[in-house]
Image (cartoon, rainbow, N blue to C red; front, side):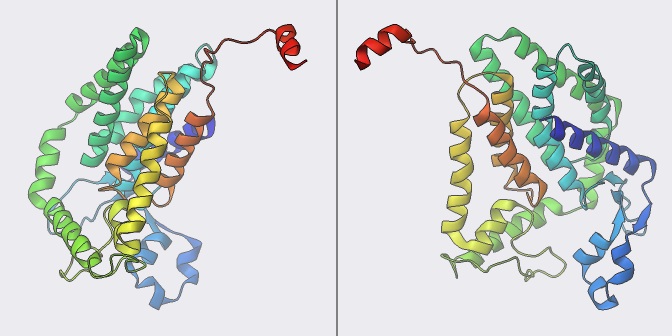
Length: 312
């Protein structure tokens, strides 16, 4: 889990770099090697010429810079942040009494500044699900310390939302963007197109029939798997994480609960976030951490002498 916390810190640093240097453009060595014909591909161009934010100063509608580093898109940043935060909170519990505890404790409220300024509605929804679910689980178990921790995180998030004009910025973004409507149309198109190849799908996303819209099979891991591999493929894909969720719902040990919460958040976010590549890694690591954590054994142990007598 410590490595995941380090990666989380790296994400926060990227968020702050995006806030401080929103127009920075980094030409990677690959940008000088790739032929111009390949650089005309939008995805390859974005991978070879990196930016710290999703921001276009020449756009018709003026939208404030939204941090994205170290990822290509702000949605990737929001997905990673929301999936890692429960694990970071659980790691904080594991290292209590150590020096790193205080470092992480200070980093938590600091991390909410770039998180809030991404204006990432999907991330807000994921974090809301995580807080409500973890709080309910702790309440059912009568874990007062756990409830206090969830309330503290919620209070920090609320303060961060109040310190910045988030409502105004989100409303301005919605007025200048049709992303919600575009996503809805894209999801309908993905479903209806897959009906033509329900068993095997189309192998990969393809251009949409709507001019200017993203490719069909993007804007959500669920829709990518559905469009690429058909109804059977997406059923098994989703079922795998549902099984892992219920397999890790054992008790309120903070580490197990964190992994279980990550899986729940992921099951919500796969409908509007692409989870390639880091998202899927976090989901499987969260499941592995939760499954590996020892569960309290309440069975009655048989004394050795008595056990030997039974064997004879």
